[in-house]
Length: 439
Ligand SMILES: Cc1ncc(COP(=O)(O)O)c(C=O)c1O
Image (cartoon, rainbow, N blue to C red; front, side, top):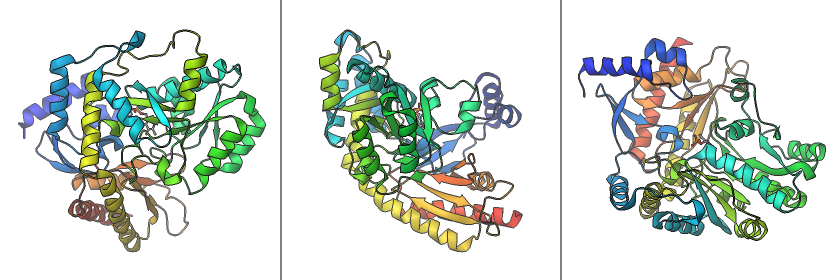
């Protein structure tokens, strides 16, 4: 715990100097940061006032191996002591990047065997769109440029990734989405087919989907959907990009969520869980076929690269993180604890009439708030009140309240155990009681 005056001083400095991402600038200015965290251990975080909270979101769906893992600090220390960074432009390379690329090829479904490294999910998205367009250009089809994505899909905040994102407030922020992005209905084969018919396959470079939409409210692709999408894409020569930025590295109870559906995309995106958030890293994996075609047809320098593509320290941390995911069977734990989480949600649904659908896939889940009288969402939103009451009681969750949703979402670290799941459900229950009493 640190002294109150230091805490207050930090709050003041935060208000004055730190522009927070995806935050209400007004609220931050009025109320200050709700938490200033100083340390973490397993599924728990501690703040400047000494409060300990259970992180029901693994921060931003990413701290898969939990907080306070010294092994990752040591991996970073060892690598930084030898060689923190050297660039990967002009075909130069480094050992951790090569080893991580090979490890990812071993883990990824099918023949996704080559990796372009980035520093996060948004960069991975923009990279994938550019690679898809470049691919078709090299094939003599430069008109194949459009990227089809889904409503409620979230792909990040670069100009390209924002444009593919199918959540309208992200567009209206600046009213300047990029050209050649088209949105179809969520998990709707009919909508996708109609879009291809309308736009013309000869103008479409790729279709992108998350297997489980995270920021859009934890919407799980129904079985059969991705399989059908795969064959539609094949039929029309459209590349299939699967965004596994949240779902990768065990989040859904498989190493990659594509495995639930038995499909192999042409490009697969990852970030977040690859390092459990200990250091920024992301990437795009491509199949052998795409890789070979790019190599054979390319006509000069691939003029796309980030200074930190293949960052040695980030890759060393990624390797250690994956080693831990494997050696501690965290993918299986995600599956098993996901079932416990779902059981807990089902119990709560029996107890609270305003809980509608509940769902999980591994350790990603959601509960929807619905007015039992109308079966629609309440006029005044419930989920933010649940989240506020939960935070007061020591549980962090997130809410999704756009596009008609009033949903509380969950994504705890994959190291969570049965006792901690029970604690999560029990805090949630008392938060729901408080909200019920205020209805
Ligand atoms: C599915 C998905 N794709 C891409 C992104 C963007 O990743 P980043 O915030 O690392 O740029 C996110 C972030 O939440 C995401 O959930």
